[in-house]
Amino acid sequence: MPARNCFALLLAALLAASPAFAAAQSHRDDDDDTQSRIDTTVALSPGGVVELSLVSGEIKVTSWSSDKVQIKASTEGGILRVDATPGRVSLSVRSDRGDMGDTQYQVTIPAGARLIAHSVSGDVTTSGGSEVEAHSTSGDVDVSTVTGRATVESVSGSVKATRIGAGLRVSSVSGDVTADNVTGDIDAQSVSGDIVLGGARSSFVRTQTVSGETRFGGTIDRNGRYEFHSHSGDVELAISPAGVTFSVQTFSGDLQSDFPMTLQPGAEMGSKHMEFSINGGGARVAVETFSGDVTIERAGTSAPQD
Image (cartoon, rainbow, N blue to C red):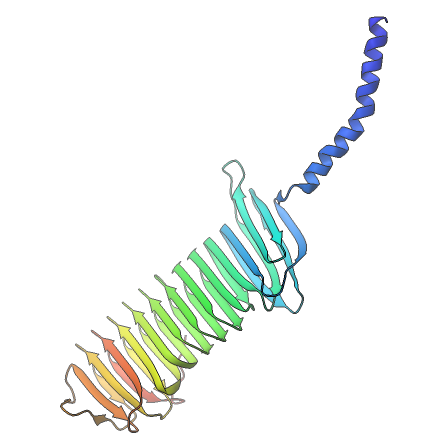
């Protein structure tokens, strides 16, 4: 066969094959689960987990009654990835050839799902979920409307928790800590920020701050235990007139109380360590501050403020 004819046949074969090759390439691109923009909805089993993580940007989460997870996400320079199984949905982002800009997540989860959210540099805001863990290294974290337990943490940023149904652990290294309407045990810590707890319904509360004020408002369980520790900040407690046994220790601060105080045997008013009871005693309340005043007032006389 002449060479010219062989070349013509080869060219015809390539042209015939090229649409199939293009279709196959397009199919691989469509199946690729890494992209810079995602708008999708996936199913999640009852009690399933939704995990979100990003480097720089913002995470916003809401909830609904559906058993599906709705994801709307975009990234500047990064590559998004969704991994979905019946019991777990994960959304993450990685750099594309070293390039990584801000990333935005807008996610709606089932009301009964468990949520885990991590941000290195960015704010995290969530509403809903049966159990929530929200963490940011450099950014504010705001968690609300959790039916179960919540863990809220930021290294450099303020943290806030509202309407938590079954216990709270909240901490910030450089920022204020605010919690409102929490039922269950509360553990709140801040190194250089205030701690403000309002509307608490708990039988165990523990707070600790190095250089910030502590304000607590809520009901007191007669069989409960409450501990408030501050190195260089005032402690203000707004409590209902329940039976309480106090142990107060302050090195260079004053004590003021709206309630008549009955000193324990051997205790002296004005000393660095005082033990006394209100309304016959009951719940154990310990307050320690090195250079701050301690104020005990009736609930409702002044609400804790942010």
